[in-house]
Image (cartoon, rainbow, N blue to C red; front, side, top):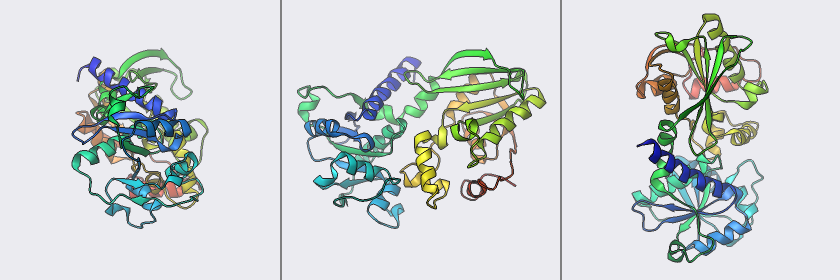
Length: 377
């Protein structure tokens, strides 16, 4: 994929995201399915967006939910027996903004005037892929993965409906993580002395056609070292900035910079992947569910997200731009080692980065070890 083609595909995805986030429907141009779909994000659906959806739809919409969320809505104890994306048929009483928000968001009080039901028909492979793309589009926009979907009316496709709807191709949604990585641009660099690493620079990278920016914090001259010390750190506003005790992120960030300062060189990749890729607002929702008894993995799944939504291809792209092909990785997460190696990066050694529990994050750390496979011993 060329840079221009990738940037155009990213632009189409972000235009669709902008429409979804303002509560308006978009068209998903599907591949092989019987009809293109018109989509509306349940979390932000209002009366105007619902009316536009009805004008453009060729049938009553269904609500697409991830199986983990659909299982709770349908009160089924074993969502793993469902397909990855479950379409629900909604009574008229549920096709209203407040009812849709409650169906999408498990942190809200779960009262509703009627009950949805699962659509019984078995989807084709093309239909399943289109439904997955619909939820992926919401996820890219950091919206809850709960989307109203209906076949697109032919008149809407021909331009008879006004105003015309923004359209995005299913293939562009599916290819978004790759396109976002390979089109990454190095856009700025400045010397920024840090308390624990006075000889530090920050290099900024930007994903074209979006507001997504990743940073590389360089201590010393790691580009010239044969095997520099590297850490991939996903941003954590609550831990990194506020000093939250719910996680060890702030300790890991400052500890990594301090270690690099002591060694005289290193690279910390500060990745815009808050909350394992679900975004800050959804992380706060996950915290609310954790306060009700779920662990960090199950809270993400209850919201309809995967346990870890991050892609580390962007990190490999940043390292390539910095001229780093071999490195020592500072991490407790073996998956990060394998992710970089899968991208062609030579990780010669994994170095542990462990901090003691603080009395509040004990269960969080135990969950990382037991359910995510982090090596904390």
